Image 1 (cartoon, rainbow, N blue to C red):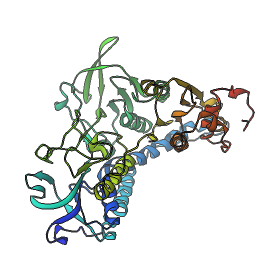
Image 2: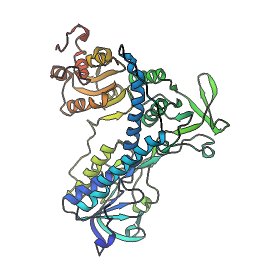
Image 3: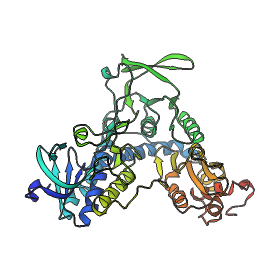
Length: 476
């Protein structure tokens, strides 16, 4: 194991850059700066590596894949003459294997990297702004510039009685060594959807409750279709509800909700809170430092990643926007480059792809239809059911659709939204098309490989002006 470098690496405690937070964003900023020869203090507090590798992306997608293998065996009968079965023999072994991968990646992608950068010192302990500048573990640290990348954590739902009911979060749910009989998921965002399907496929009776609809930021056609596919798998989806109260019960927990039919009570052995996340800003002394926060408690930054205090930058989940690990790393890299080289880089999320790892997967980039209209565009859309995509027919799995959003005048592609079993691996093509300001005509004229999910983008683009049902294979 790499040895963590103490502050004594720099006798006078002075650095070109101090990075507060040692997750993906923190390492991105620190490595970017160290690669330019800057003297960098990377300040971590807690488990090195942050959310993604330890309790977020890596463990959740590992378990999602494990549960997907169970589903695929059950779905094998969609092919004539084939049947298969699969079962969980030892959930503890599944969890142990997940933990092993997390440990390996934390070592290889975080701890082992520290020794590779001679100008980077790792300091372990809480950081806080003081009247004299910045302190780590109570000791003063001098830095010309500072980047805050402390991430976020699960927020508590605002439900009367919740303080008396033990509930799971996205972190603790992935640590369960025994599966519950039933699970009530509060929240229909991407975390709630991913984990609800994971546990349902593992044999847990799952109910999702939400105030609006599943994936409220997604296109409504995709949200509605996904809710239907969840129902087909036995997941109960209850939407447009008001949470009245929650309490312990003999079954485990009891939640009272209100909807069109009045009040109803839902019970489950365990409750999973998936209602959102809050920025980690407590204890940093931001008020003393004059660093402004947004209404949601996240740090306010401009398009150069600058906070309201000169010389202090912030990036990632602590800013409350684009809460994806790759966007945190991107923003932190920009922050480091701007801190060292004069604020010349602007944050650009125009072609930011986003993926929800349900099955079918939800992948999107650019504007939704509603966002495009709010931005002043006259809009045209196309919606292509997956039954028109040859890959889906060959796989005998036509769950999903592709929706494209375009400017009516120029035909420029503004947004692409995919619901498909392999949608995540197709969205980058649409992202590149939006980045290049391509029109739907140009997208429809591109050469795509046959019998791929991504070919659906070509067909969806052609469907603005053609009936794709009247085209032969590969026509166009």
